[in-house]
Length: 468
Image 1: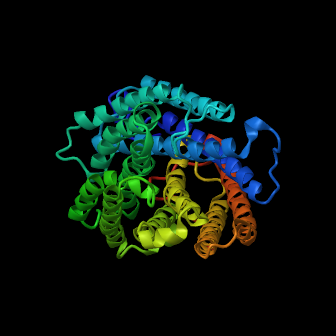
Image 2 (image 1 turned 45 degrees about the horizontal axis):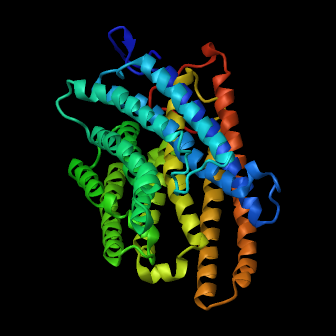
Image 3 (image 1 turned 30 degrees about the horizontal axis):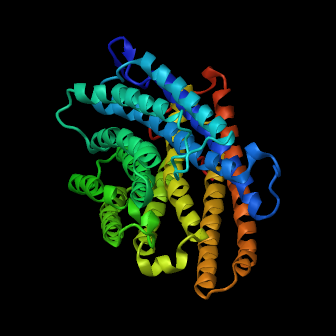
């Protein structure tokens, strides 16, 4: 705690809140992954809960996806915001007590979401399956979170807002609107294909206007700090921000290509998607330009390795996305496992990897102890990377096999039989990933339980791997 400056009588950074949100993120990460593993067994005819309605595969899948987004990712991002915003503004968050209320309320929302979905009250909206009685609580929670995080930004006496704060403010403005749009308009007021178009916007804007701006904003904060050099190009950072703001809201309909939605909307989504992928390349170039001359840091700093591995995944995802949204590709990959592999690469391979980088840097500060098992963290990195790479390659190949069989008008049963080997590999890859996360959770626990006097928290950027 001594390494964190103070603002008056209050610590500048509330490390207790950071620790609690990171702990909740790790817990819900395991819940989400166990749900995904159970769902994968359904494809191997080994589902562990046959005949149990409230643990049926469809309901467990909703828990897997929603808890990954709102439990694992959102909690970790809140922890990152709690650390980054006060350091960028030199002002603490608006209220520590309100932060405690938000923490408790958010975990209650997640529990209600799990119970409601397993009880059969999930909404029929992809990524918006949160029960209808949970949605008002989410919106109130988001408003409180925005107030608590925005006040220091507006009160700052710094001469200019760093680009990270631009991304954070944009996410604060967009997220509540996106959530309201996706969870209320199609459900109650806009039926048919118009409602489907709005659902498509919600699916993609949840990623692009909530997860992406906070993720990139935290990257613009952590990466220069760990490399101990400024971002390569401030101009490119602004191009990336405005490109995201302009193109991203228009591409959600690409989730419903070859559907009854008017073709002009589908073509517009295709163009916007390809355009935003080009813009993203400027962001990737900016970060690798920042790395130039300091590439040796990746070998020694595990957080940076997670960050830049995630950026490579982001570049691959965007390259893939620019092609897969074309109608030519859609004729092959539509409704196939290619899409599942793509989703895992972006949500886990990009944002999940960035979150592990946050953990590497923030957990020792949150618990006041250095990492107890740094070699275990290295094993966790490689096992997670191998497991995810195997899963993505496997599902991509499965999608191509399925797509070409369907295009050739093969019997549906033939595509199922052909997919079974891929589904076994997917389950094996999932077991590797979950095993790695078990090691990671043990590392978190072992570090937190060390005697306080045994270690001293290093300054930020100094958490490194041991020498071989």
